[in-house]
Amino acid sequence: MTKIEVAMREYADWCSAIGVNTLDKLRMVMEEGRVIPLINLCEARQERKYAEIANQIYWKKDKCRIVMMSGPSSSGKTSSSLRIAQQCRVLGLVPKVIELDNYFVDRDKTPRNADGKYDFEALEAMDINFLGEQISDLLSGREIELPKFDFVSGTRHFDGKRMRLEKGDILFMEGIHALDPAMTPSIETDKFFKIYVSALSALPSEDKEHNSTTDKRLLRRIVRDNRTRGISPEETILRWPSVREGELRYIFPFEENADVVFNSSVLYDLPVLKHYAQSLLSGITSESGAYEKAQSLLSFLSKVIALNDSEIAAIPPTSIMREFIGGQMLY
Image 1 (cartoon, rainbow, N blue to C red):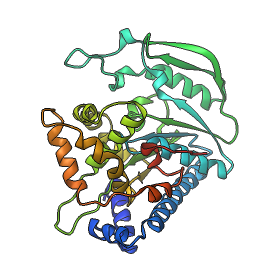
Image 2: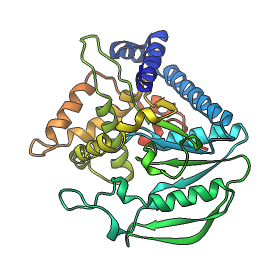
Image 3: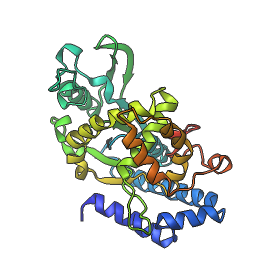
């Protein structure tokens, strides 16, 4: 089996072990008022997984001083990265972060797609030579000055922020190309510990219809983008095909390069997403190009009972779902 299949099988076995392995059984748990204990159990499992990954990083710390993390949109990469970093601190390691978005080439060197628009997701949009030089310097014990990319002017500048890897320091980097060896061709691959994060699992229903993990990520993005960026659900749905195209080109081909696959699904994710997404989707009219997809999402959400306010309040601030619904506090 592939690493993705192993992660999915492990999650399915766990769902079976606790007796919540279909949407119908999840509905039963909710109808019986047992959802808060289920939330607590899911969160305990996630935290255990974060700790297990941190343990592996610790065991390899003398050789692998760089943690690279990637995954498709709305997988919870930011939350996962911060929770794993926190678990590394428990072990006495000191996580430091390099933001790969600061390593874009200047705008005049950015490649364009077939439509003539800037292709910021292409590997060629990244200054991989400069990134490689800075990583090599850090691994050699030298201090570097970190770049800052100005997205308005499309140029890189420096503001005096410096970094050196001291004993016990672990470097964290997250980005769509993080698992692609071409991102860091000048660095030996055994210097990296690579993590792939995605919401890999969805509960089947008794009528044999399966909801989609891709749709689950789309719902996460609809809720988050509307809350944090003021982006309408209609706009998010219409953008989704281009997001998916980027995932197919730049992320999925390299998922098996990961040392660890983290499944960011939780059993209560659809009930909490329904609480926020149903009204957003219902506001999309039949004249919109997003209407058909909105109706499809509403159709499979109809099989789910939404969490109520008191149940949502029970979701801890460290939960991966807080990245999307708000109220997150990761430290």
